[in-house]
Image 1 (cartoon, rainbow, N blue to C red):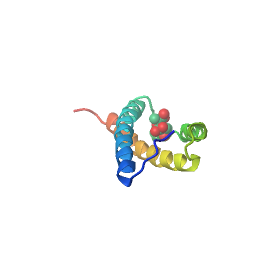
Image 2 (tube, rainbow, N blue to C red; image 1 turned 90 degrees about the vertical axis):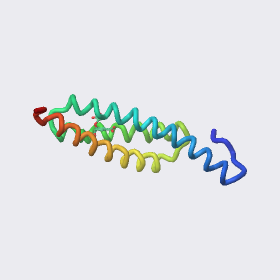
Image 3 (cartoon, rainbow, N blue to C red; image 1 turned 90 degrees about the horizontal axis):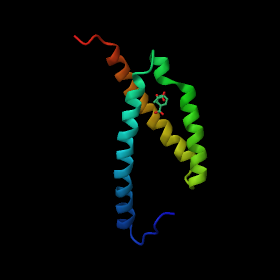
Length: 100
Ligand SMILES: C=C(O[C@@H]1C=C(C(=O)O)C=C[C@H]1O)C(=O)O
């Protein structure tokens, strides 16, 4: 249950506090996405659309359980995963290059 604020400043302090946690989690999530690139054969494997839909379905269910907005959660996740796919495609392409 979220803290109830009495000023806009308090609201923004709470948002700033959560943003620090979210960015730390993005860094950790991104490091696992980078590791995934090493297990993939080609760019279709990197994109893994079935896995994307599995993640979306899971986070929509989680949103219901945790009292978050499922549509907002899905939109945020689709944008985030899209960006991580771009990161992973670049890393996968770099792995395929000769190292000399
Ligand atoms: C990390 C993976 O690669 C990509 C990124 C995903 C994600 O950020 O959740 C999911 C599927 C893939 O599009 C994976 O295949 O698990």
